[in-house]
Each structure stands twice: as C-alpha cells, then as structure tokens.
Image (cartoon, rainbow, N blue to C red; front, side, top):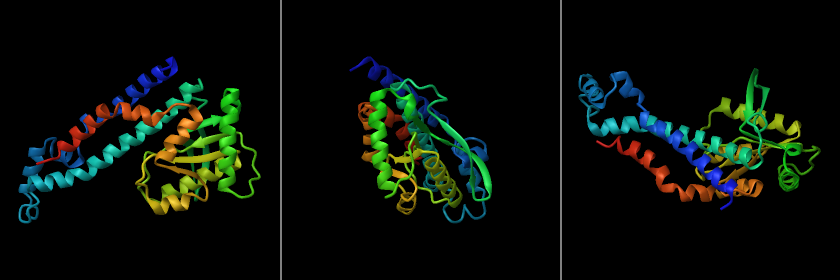
Length: 255
C-alpha cells in the first residue's frame, strides 16, 4: 500500500464515520413533537380518539410510523458520505484545493435563477499530464456516446454525485437538466454517477439525454479509472464498521 493510499484510506474512514455518528443523534420528528421519547409518543397516541380505537397506539404502529423518516435520514447521510468521499478522492489524488475541485454557477431553471454546484469538478489543465491525457480521452469517448455529433471542446468534467436517485420531484429534475446543459455548453462533460442499482428508472432514462449516467459498479469503475484509487475496495475493507451505526438505528425502531 502506497503512502497516498494509506493516507486517503484514513481520511475517507474519518469522513464516513463522522457522518454516520450523526445517526446516533437522530430524533424522529413524531418523537420530537411528542416531547422527546418513544413512551411520550405512545401515550400521545393512546390519548387520541382515532389512534386508540384502530390500533395505532401500539408499538408495532410506532415502529412503522418512525421507519419512514428514519430511512430518509439514513439516505441523506449516505448522500453526504458519497459526495464528500468522491470529492476527497480526487482532491487528494490530484492535490487540488477545495476551490479547484468544485464548480459553482448561477443557472436558470424554469423562471428561477439559482446557484448550482458540481460536486466534483476536474479541470484538465490543473491535472498532472498523465491524468490529463487519461481522463481527457475517457471524457471525449463518453461525449461521443452522449451526442453523435459533438461540437464541443472539453475543458473538464463536472460530476453530480449521488449514492442513489429515488425521487421524481419535477423541480429537482428540471434543475438537474438545466445544470447538465450549462456544463455541456461550457465545455464541461456532465457525469452523474449513481452508486446504487436502485435508482428511479424513469428519471435515469430521462437524464441519459443530457447526463453521462453511470450506475452501480460502473460508477465505482469510473472513479477508479480516473483517479487510480479503488473506492469500492475501501468500502469493502471497512464494511463491518460502516454497517454498525446504521443497524443500531434501524434496530432502535423495533417494538
């Protein structure tokens, strides 16, 4: 193991565990509303003239009603983890500053202007020569797959990093598409790695006209091919530690 890989491993491990530690502090909305404990929420339901009649004052219902918000919280943390880790991989491997590895711009989405950022931005002329050639060729090949008649000279690649994409929110979709079009006309290849295989198929199919979409292991392969670092191998080596905080939170829902 090289010094760079060892250092990157430690950095990524700290990033993941820092985000997962926040799960232990998670308090579901219904519990917070009832005063801060599960017992208070159960009593709140038992005093309700509907919940108390139809069995919604039980531990089984409590577990079910808390599950939705808890799952959402877990996925938010996973999103934070993947965004932070992928940015750290490229930043550390190519010795890029935080400002150099992120691209932000105001874009018009519908009738609203908002500032959007690419989670990871690699400007070719800031990369070492070997990486510049390798990543440049990779991006040119992907551009030809995205459009049969590319008329753009690429200066870099911008990534919208998602651990998974399950939502079908129209406003978010419109903003994502506007961002992809902006990147492309700016000479930046828009790539959206979706690291899971459970993303919304309709959204993925729609995005493929403006984003280079990578799913599942193809996303991990892309990171490895561009950076030389095997992020999936890192996750496998630390899998046992990364599962514990998530399982502890899920088990806390059980009656």
